[in-house]
Image 1 (cartoon, helix red, strand yellow):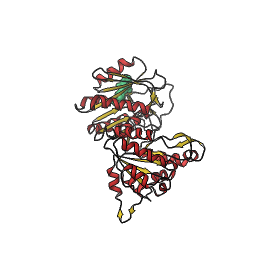
Image 2 (cartoon, helix red, strand yellow; image 1 turned 45 degrees about the horizontal axis):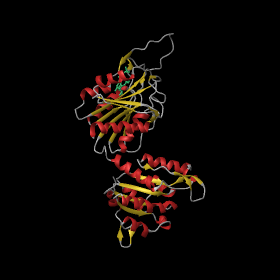
Image 3 (spheres, protein in one colour; image 1 turned 180 degrees about the horizontal axis):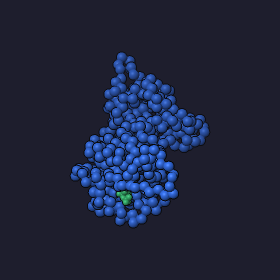
Image 4 (cartoon, protein in one colour; image 1 turned 60 degrees about the horizontal axis):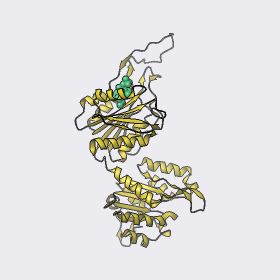
Length: 398
Ligand code: CTP
């Protein structure tokens, strides 16, 4: 898997820098080509000579080495993946804030490849609010964080903050490379969240959809290299800031317009949104007063977006729908798959505890047009998203 892969390893000032030597050995053994860049502080922890001998390449520290200038842009473009291991608290903060006071940071800022980091610091530093904020920023930039281990720390304390073991880092790199390119060149449109149908300036008809499932799918596709447009209804969720193109809509009609436009230019469409089926015929321009004991609201059907996309899609486009049911789940999901001319239908049932709206977990069954069926256990929505995306690959792009 790593044979021939170009790996740029950034080493920063942390006791865990000694583990970089083991990491380089594992990467070289696996057939990767490794170039190492160290921060000046890291050279107090491990020598350039050790790392250049193991990596079989010159180790760079400064932007200007003797008479030559290290071309940080080309180094950033050379790599298939950039790995910061160990990532110190200081370099983490600089990465989060776009600082550029050494070669490693200049290369990081120029890198066009996926970046993964293996933080290493003392427990109190790891749990500090500023560290949490910096890690959050990196996640928003699309950087993958290798979880820290719990154990004995350089301070003698026992707790969170140890850098992951080199074997774990290698596995993480392999996984990252495996997924990072599988959708490159593909354009994907994902709809998510509810729609709100206004009754008057203060009221609407809506539903409990949080948008979490659609967001997780959009992020998974983005992580695998797709160009993603996320069309998000009015949920409380923050739109991603990591390169996913996000469009906020409110009503079913607005979602219809946005989805129709973007699906036209897409290879794949995933309709995870819980679109309102009916909208008020009249929207009052001022607040409706409670003047009568009963109030009848006349509703008309909204456009069925999935159905309309299904009717107009080309044979090359893949269309995925969702079916949230409360009864006769299988039957209704299969009916929707057929009637809306989707390629895949992801079914979830409100009868399964932990599945459906608002939760961080989901339990799904996927049906495809040829009659295949895939059943999954209850799991976090991020894992569900991986399974959905894996199934798209398996069925349409393998
Ligand atoms: N959908 C859509 N446009 C609508 C209604 C639904 O695109 N106006 C899509 C949803 O995004 C989902 C699929 O159709 O991918 C199924 O939605 P669901 O609400 O489960 O089914 P409906 O077709 O609305 O049927 P019903 O409410 O009767 O179950």
